[in-house]
Amino acid sequence: MGKLIIFSAPSGAGKSTIVQWLMKEHPEFNLAFSISCTTRAPRGTEQNGMEYIFLSPDEFKEKIAQNEFLEYEEVYEGRFYGTMKSQVEQQSQTGQNVIFDVDVKGGCNIKKYYGDRALSLFVQPPSVEELRKRLEGRHTDTPEAIENRLAKAEYELTFADRFDHIIVNDDLEKAKQETYEVLKAFLEP
Image (cartoon, one colour):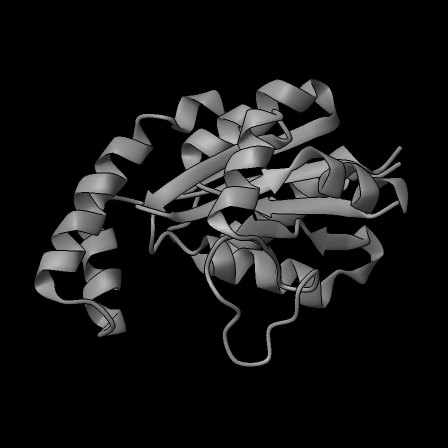
């Protein structure tokens, strides 16, 4: 049975870069992304059960009522994202080590549910000022969106001490190496 690895971070901290590097460069870890559910429509070539499990809002609400989610969030009205317990079990029973890329509340909920079977990692920017530079450097957000992301980041940073390990990403190569070492120690018998 596989183990569970939870990654959370404020937007722009470098979490996705680290996770993608692990997936590509370290096949020995047998990592697989947790397949989340969403009520949004598939985009481009997305297929049901591959990138996401696509549900109607009513189907999603029914699963909430049945307590089938480890964590979920209504991002805005009628648009839900969540992680089903059954999907995680199915993936981990094949021996895959399941990676979660979730917000801080979701990360805390998953860790609480699985306890020692899960490792929770918080990827932290060196500072809010550095985070601002990174977000501005992406050129993908309006100034207002950047301010919203920074306000959210300040809130999310207050959750860092609830995670098993904090990776400070002030140097990407160093952060990758630290993540690798922590994962190796967790996954090896």
